[in-house]
Image (tube, rainbow, N blue to C red; front, top):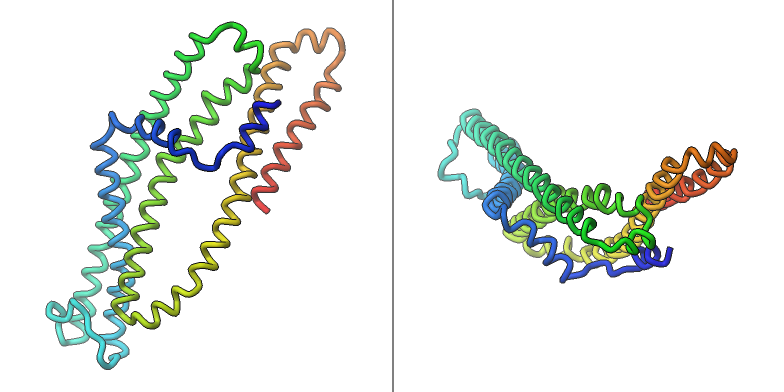
Length: 265
């Protein structure tokens, strides 16, 4: 129990641990590089779509005075032909976006599965070398959670977390750059809410992090109790302790449910 509580109260970010985790990506450097390039290109294309819509409205539909675009020299002065050119560009961006999303998803998922394979193999080899006393102090269900659930969480970090962080950063940078180019004064007024958003994000981050750590601890307890109960089911039935075991499992299961409800709320 003490070790589990220490896990809940551990550090939110450990640079040394993160460096150790990133070493598992080294054998797959070129796959990760291709995925990151695809992420950057997709972020640029995501920003380009609304920019093309703005150009079509300002140049051909609303005829906004004083509006200029870097595409003016390429676009036709005739509205129908110009809109057709913009539509063609927009379709091209959608096709390229789909292709980049396919590349990033394929290579990140492939890399994540390979990292999971390497990590689980290393954990299993490590468990084989541990002294028998280690298994007396640590429930088997908790160790199984390390090899299964926790490794799955790391896979989510590699395949979804890294992609989301890089993509969101580049999309946000592109949006900010376009806003500053269009009207830097209005952009600065808009940026005034960023400190409030940053503060709300930090508060939400702390609460969600603690909730999901409690979920991980609860899952480890469920797995540990299930392993002990199932392996000792003959003894439970022999001494007619099924109802007591069910009550104890319901209590552990309820703590897992409450942890999930806290994360949702």
